[in-house]
Image 1 (cartoon, rainbow, N blue to C red):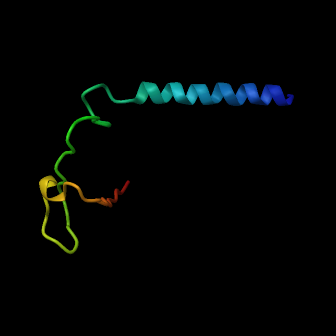
Image 2 (image 1 turned 120 degrees about the vertical axis):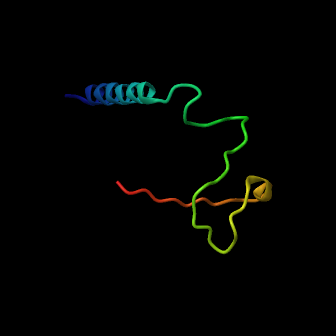
Length: 71
């Protein structure tokens, strides 16, 4: 297979993967980016070096959220 054949196969594979990603995307109104909507309250814990803060108290600040998942 020549260079053009390899490129064609790679392009077809990339398009197939992109298509699968669109199929797996959540329906509108479910999860995902909520552009133009306020951020939800941060729940859970523990908070390090402070009491739990609300979104109002964090407004205008840079917030780093670190979370872990097991699985």
